[in-house]
Length: 390
Ligand SMILES: Cc1ncc(COP(=O)(O)O)c(C=O)c1O
Image (cartoon, rainbow, N blue to C red; front, top):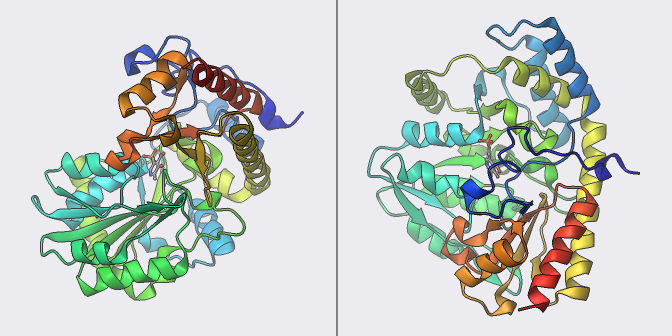
């Protein structure tokens, strides 16, 4: 049996994904394939390092040693050829927190921040909640594939009140891994119109072999002074609850204003266990991750053939990386509310409804495939049954 086949009961473990279904409008026994965390145990090396720390029993304030920085820097150099400098790195308790700080640091109230829906919904939340304007340049969905409308993007970027672009690279939920050329075009447009960029690269490790991820600073080195790159070990090693992320800001001016925002939010020390886990994962977790990625790809393959064979009305949007299946359900010819009702109430599945990612996501559902195959199989058979009974 593959280690990833093991079903671990996460109910009653303070799990956002599994506990509180009713609070989220789901059935009590809903099968959870929502929210991007994995139902797999983190690598043994990480668990052992944390165990050692826990056994020591002292949970005082933490501050990373040189070895932490070496592990983080080593990961990006080895797997992306990106040579970072220690002074660029700012630690935050998660990327969504960093996005909010970036919006506050790099824009003024009332200014516009550009995003590309359908996109990870906290992007709009942090813009709206900080009294900035959401400016959308929607991705174009054609023949089952998403692309960027560069002339629309330039039109939006050229507006005098647009000062920041939040890029999701790779893109959640549509699964695009942007090519170097696409990133260069975006970078050139932003440079022309003095728009700063926050590149959320949290999913970079999941890019598939034939769709390599390009770090934004490497794709557009001339923009490096105006870019903030958000990274974290949280998706790669299933450590989201330890709230540790590494934000790289090469430009001194941008970094200073970001640090000032963090200071004014009262954040100082990173989570002690998060430091331990991040260092260990980046140093010794690669082999586990390679196996995990293979398993995720086999789940995707399983889902693709299951849909083709049993539920041909649903179309998988082929991802180029990541552990989501973004599924086009327009073939069911339901309204978006009817679709949500089918998923939640008839199929008993707890997914991410596509509409939370933006209006253009209304006919879609997002499945998180980071679960044992048996869970995925159960979910798909519940869905098939509900659709057949429609
Ligand atoms: C694109 C993207 N950014 C950020 C996050 C969350 O980051 P964090 O938990 O570090 O706030 C996610 C989680 O799914 C994500 O998909």
